[in-house]
Image 1 (cartoon, helix red, strand yellow):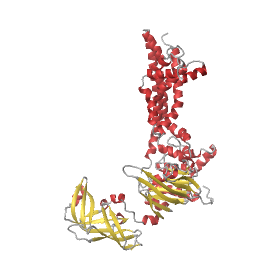
Image 2: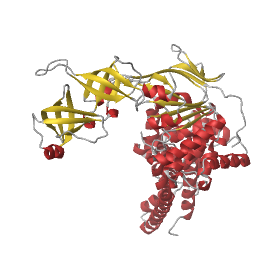
Image 3: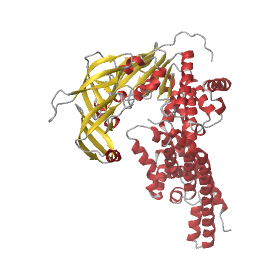
Image 4: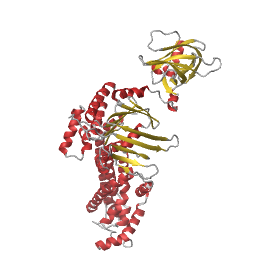
Length: 387
Length: 236
């Protein structure tokens, strides 16, 4: 591709409010952000509103209020209290490239015809040339006569990218474009995408929930949660920020403790936190355990919460040695309770922890209440949350 | 002569004109039913489906009244052409279009509705107008349903009786179709002639349907793995 120096492309700026009334759980999207040319990663769990945000920018969904513009060009504008949008450019005229989550390649058209689809306004000859050049750039020119059903997942992904990029969009939206691919295929496509971005420099909104992709592509990351942008910055800054404690996250952790940061080890990327449990009968209040956790943006003395999934904790009947896991804690088995096909073991090790075991593990270890055990917890199994 | 070839020619002509017209009229109607979000849409759907349950004589009666010289439409036609629509081939075509409407529109609608909306969204983001999306994406992916609709309309018109009798009567070469001819022969106790024409109609309709369904299966076959493939894309 010609890598001539172009004047800087305009940035995308979006202010979007949209409410989805629902009897069960009302969801609202409320975001305000700018995306300069280059990658802007939208990072967050599924259900955070990332796809809805992309749909609004593409025009497939209509915000209740807000303003979406690329440079001087306004794509959408509506006020909260006016029934009709002031500006609402149709999807077809927005010049927004969108690779949908399941790609939506046209199954009845060949790879070549799929790629040419967005070039209907051009004469046949230049349409063919542009498509061929784009297919070559994404290394799939040999597939031009194939139908999408006959090619691999990675190849389909490349076709979807080529089809969106060949139209020279002013903004590119990518909805988890690499989610279903293996690491090697992913890395190659990421390289091609990065190369394309360097040459064209348009705002790219890239949705993912993979930390790996965030680090590989990230120039700037917006972290989304429940329809809001809760943090933004470089991948380094954002991935280190403690997560907001929400019901969604709490639901995933059987063990949640108050924690105080004792010491920070920048060089090792870890910190030590003292965790305290709620006082309970038979155990004096204030007993605590020291845990090694991942390093986040915090200071010694900061008060946080630590969440540990019951399935992430190993249980041993003798003190294990030679492990990579950094937290090995002695305790006493308080109770064993069978729940369907798993056994929930409660261990008192200064705080009380819930550990999930299989039935076979319980039998093999000959576990019984009152037995001395050791708990093994990996550093990265300790999830830190804001209090 | 056992077989009334004139009636056969007339019936096939009628069926071709009707299914052809329904193809042209039915596509936009089916598109609208499949994609409109109008809250009163169900009303239109009910009207389209009405001929399935309505006795042909009822439908024929109202069409006859509407075409007759007492209705505005009938009077307008009469002042325009000098003769009435009732008991003409054109009148027969109009009645048959209403009578076979659901047999064309319902398969069209069903196949349009089964086209993945994500493809329509993708088409729009690639700059395609609704019309271009319709002809380049929706129609090609609905071919089996379109063929089925057109053929059902054709076969249904081939076999209609009540509507023809009400609107067209029994004028040889103008409105006498095969089914009317068969009825006539039975009334006159010419069972051999009735049987010859009935058997021919049976074989003809069966042959048409067989060929179409066989062709439809062939066009579906290579498409099947393709249609499956894009649903195996990344999942959330």
